[in-house]
Image (cartoon, rainbow over all chains, first blue to last red; front, side):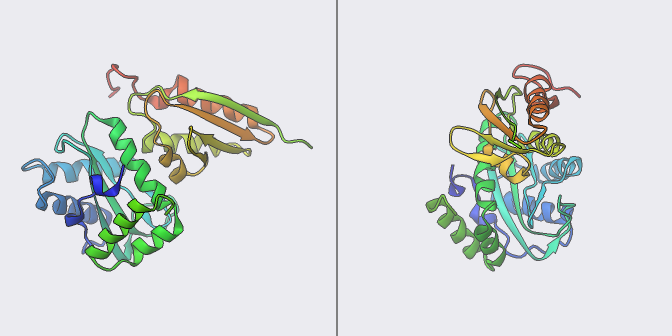
Length: 157
Length: 101
């Protein structure tokens, strides 16, 4: 699976306005909604569901990245987008450090395998220090989109 | 002293596969042991104590994984992990079962 298969580049937020976890999630869900990627009128519902999931166990896996996600009927296919915070956001991450890169993933309720494939793709790259660094340094939506496209062409990134 | 090495195969039996929450449970159990634990599918081998690496396996229902433990408590570790994956199924339903509320 490639980033370009499931990431909505149009919804990427290069500088999140939110300073906290719930705000960042709401901002990213709203951005997906604005890009027309959620079912109509589902913005609030999806936001609440992602936050609820996040409260059960943080998706802040350390090293400045978090991947809030939920399985929800508001989408028919896996959809994701990326938000960046230069100041960092408290996600109650495993290593207690702030999160600079947030990947929001919304998956359909009935396709667990596709959800896993998207997760695999995201973490394969997030594990690479170089990729994390570039993602954190990218200052515009275009730069982030470009980085994801390049990663699609370089599986070892 | 020679290192004790134990290797077993397990199969993912919960319907949703090894998504983030099960991956975290796996890492929690693995981290209770001192031995080194690596988990592999056909393509990759990852550190069984790293949540990012475990999430990368993306093992779906029915996937077979190899768990290799090296160190003094290797035997206990692989047994505990087998129980988590195959018996407890990460406290999740198998395909067709109702979700426990």
